[in-house]
Length: 334
View 1 (cartoon, helix red, strand yellow):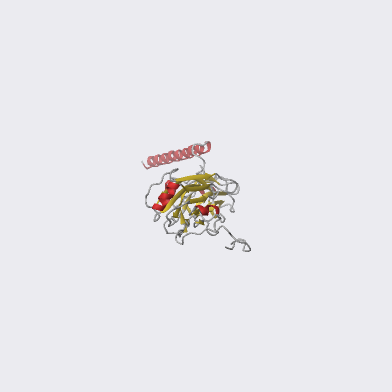
View 2: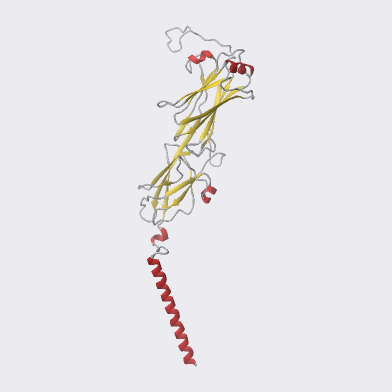
C-alpha cells in the first residue's frame, strides 16, 4: 500500500486485523475533588477496552506523566473483578523523569495476563495511577493504549498503531494579597500575616488552615504583597468547569492573623476565588490605624502607671474637698 507519510513510496509491512478486533481503545479520567493544594495526591484512571480476538499477542498501556506530576503508585485490575497479580499477569515499569519529561509508566500484560484478557473480553482493564501535584498550572495527562504486539513499533496516529486516550487536565493557581493603609494615602504595609482556609467555619474558628509545602502562614513584603501559591482552581474539578453553587466549586477564606504594627486586624475572613496560574487573583485589604491613629499607652508601662495614679490622686482630692464643704454647710445650718 502507499506509504501514508512518503506518498511517493510503498509500505511493504502492512498489518491487517479483523474488523472487530480493536474496539474503542479506552478512556481516561482524573479525580481531584477535595485536593485543594500543591502537594496533594490525585488519581488518574485509564480504562482500556480489550480487543475482541481469540488470541492476544500483546497488550500495553503507557502513561507519560507531565513533569509537574510526581509519580506515587499504580494499581491494575479488571472491571468484572477477575483477579490480576503483579509480575504474574502484568508488569509495571517506570522510567524516572529526565529533562522536561516526567515519569513514564508502562503496564505490560504477560502471556498469562493476556489469556485472562481474552477470557474476559467483555470486561475492561482499569489502571489507576496516583501522582502528587508539585507545581501550579494547567496540567494535562494522556495515556496511550497498545492493543497488540504489532502496535508496539508504530507511532500513535499511524495505521495499526496505538491510540491515545482523552487528555484530562487538573488546574492549580495562586492568590495574591495587597495590603494597604486606608488612612495613610494607600501606603503599602509590610509584616501582615495571613492564613487560608477551605471553609468559612474553619476560618472563623481558626482551625485546619491550609498548609502548602510546610507553610501555613504568609507575610506581606516591603511592597505590601504576598502570594499564596498552589491552590486548586475554584471553578474546575474532575476535568470539568463548575459554577458557584455547583458541587465541587471551591471558595477560600483569607484570615489576617497579625496586623502591621499600629494597625488593627481585619475583623472578618475575606472570601476569595482562585483562577488559572496566568491570571493571578488580586485583592486589596484596607486597614485603619489602631484606635483611629491614637495610640493608648500599654498597660503596665511607666506612662500608663503615672496616668493611673495621677488620675487617682485627682479623684481622691476632689472627694475630700466635697466632704469638707458638706461638713461646713452642715455646721453653719446648725
